[in-house]
Length: 71
Image (tube, rainbow, N blue to C red; front, side, top):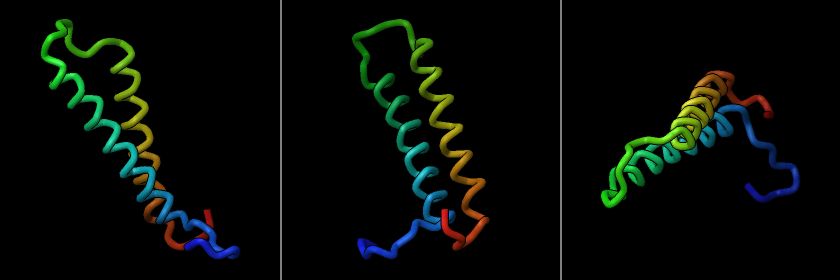
């Protein structure tokens, strides 16, 4: 993986983006649920963050079927 001629494939990039998006989504929701001392629920910054993580995961899903072509 760390050779000089290694290129990231579209499938690998897709899995990477999908995983990052889902982990970010879960992290934002879990931070909101675990921070029980604060009231107000999900604020506008968290909604933007959730939207961006969903878009990232969706972009990853669209790259996965493209196979082993270089990204």
